[in-house]
Image (cartoon, rainbow, N blue to C red; front, top):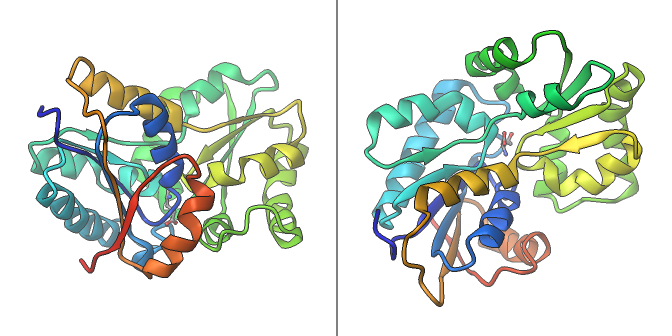
Length: 261
Ligand code: DGL
């Protein structure tokens, strides 16, 4: 892999910026190109073929920017497309999927709540994950399309946001879940609110840090660039990205762009 070539990151929108934050913390000197597909967000309501078409187009875009590795910072896109992408393109892909294995290892009550998109929960890969790692554990799934909308709207803590999050989280706690898995890259931006509603006895897990570690493992030992660029593209309105990026990534200096693909 070429050290000056950037890491590519993609998501359906600005949710994957939660993963960008983790990757930047772990790899402060790597150039990065991020693509948020806000014009096509949410992916959670789309079928797998639709998601695959978009992810192929974005991969072509990231490869045109010379990305050496692509992070699919989106559970829905990973579940729908990662296997097809790996068999099509020569670059490595780091995917992201709901952390059922660590959750099953951590639960004391034996009940785990999985918050994810409808597309992720319907995916065959998700069912394989449950079969492989969920034995002996009660897994309750809950699609939360409204969480994606809250994050895309930058509404992380209003009274409306609290009501919406309570509606999804409280039934899981009442059912005995002591671990909640954030199975969508948008949800970590709501983690403080989710944790507050769930209470201190509940562990709220997300996989952004594990994804960053995996990326680090792939590129370990490479020469790093001293003044790394971070270019962030959106297929949606540039003004939307300009408004939300500084709030979601306050420690990252980036150039923001619109791209029609
Ligand atoms: N951020 C995405 C995920 O991790 C998808 C959200 C959406 O577009 O519905 O699943």
